[in-house]
Image (tube, rainbow, N blue to C red; front, top):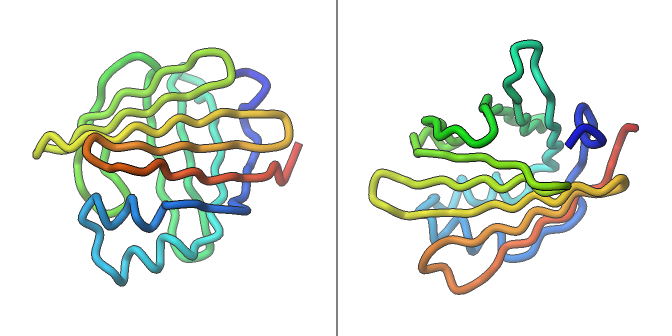
Length: 138
């Protein structure tokens, strides 16, 4: 992951993301906002050895601080608390979220030198959401 730290990636395309949000129970208004945000995402390593993954836009921002391979409680952008686990393997960051009702999502972030591709699946969701981001800084 060293090659991909502190780089910002901006959303350029999205497929089935709003359908995923609807499946997850996000209301219409919030789905529309989330689907239309020009998100920028960035992974940083902190001095204490933890990592922070940032989600930024002009309207909203959030971040997740974690230690790879250790389960933690995450508060998602919609305020829902989930059990989460993030692991690294090569250029992939896999992020699993389990809600209190058992609903499980998996976000696989594949980092490349010029882009980031995020594929999202969820147990019971019959589609895959794919979001493509381009590198905006080097």
